Length: 339
Length: 286
Image (cartoon, rainbow over all chains, first blue to last red):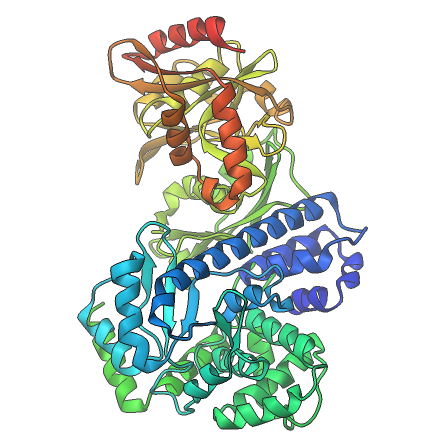
């Protein structure tokens, strides 16, 4: 059965695409789009001389599209910076925007949706007020239950959207839902963050990998997992050769109670993308890894989701991890009643 | 997927997969003269919401490379419309090689007439009608503006005739060029029209935009000039990818607006619209 192994191979070793026929290319492009990896793939294929004309065209389009996404993401970050600068609070960029702002390989060709920032929990009210009163952001939807739920249990404010630019901002005060078992040390993450030239900040290399791994596993059902894992691969390739990175990663993973997700992310990245690893941060392989890999590759040549049962199992697991059973039952009941 | 159909419209190739055979049979009959791409630009999927909905009260979900999160399904009787909507959706959300204008277009002597306006303004019907009367039909839905050269590329998909337009064109063309009549779709009654053979045979020939009209149906004959700023704003609203193209989109659109003669045209019936178009073309087309 065709699965996203085709896409993974093309990303890891673009020269292997020389063997593809028209059907293979068609499937590869559909998969890359469905996994939000078309821009990354287009950059990996750039310059190869065996691309069919149509593929070369689609890749050019995708690279331009990603370049536009990069520019828009940086502009959105700048807009937030201007509004928040007077507060004198550290503002840490997360995920895609951080990768492009810091010029990391993970940002090359990456699609970027919302602006994600991390601020101190004590500063949350002031940040929220500034964004709404001075910045022109507003609540996406007013719903008392959802609002209370976010504020009591989540690691971020309910999403805000900009009135004119139509772009969302997610304001985080930590990196996992408060109801999840691991409790990452958000203050330490902010304290260790690195300042960029414009005053905005990004996480330290080790924390960036920790956050990316937490995002991949502990919060979510692995939807978009191949892309998130590609982020991790690129981050590790950038940071791995730096002095002290592997030791710092081990220490930070422990401090944030994220050893397991980090270890698993490293193992899966190595298995799928051949990520070069050092030291023992990846731990020993576990039986479950094979299931994760099957889930990550669950995509066919039409761009469709496959392995429905496995997907469902991971979906249930994601909620299970996010909250204790009684709370989960109550939450799903309320959501169901509200339709 | 179970069934597959491929078609190239203008410079764009599509692959359409479906859980059902019938919509694709209808498509392949209507698109018989069009070539099939070996590597398509876009994939469209027509699928059942749940496995049993393939058979019981079958309803068609529209998916593909690019999707709207809350798109409502259509009944299987409207499967052909679903396929067309799926193809339009890929263009509207995914096309980055051209500036996409929600406009119809016809060509004469290598020069193109563009018509744009709100739904119901008659741009689609007018382009179909002109396509039967000495013009080359280039498209009734999307005009593709080349980001480098400013040339207009044809996108002559099936003409989607709505409501009153169906009777107008039934009187104009052979019935074998018309698809099945679909009643009570979310867009009213719809019947697809196969463009003239010449429009398909020459669909890879671009043309130079030479006249832009904003037609409006249901008013006494009137022709007005339109200021550059208004044209610009109306075209940004008529474009599905202007924002996504960033600077390249701005450059292409502003150079189009600066060079193309433009008029707003009110008309009470199609015959007077055709007369106005011919007159303005003779006077203004560059």
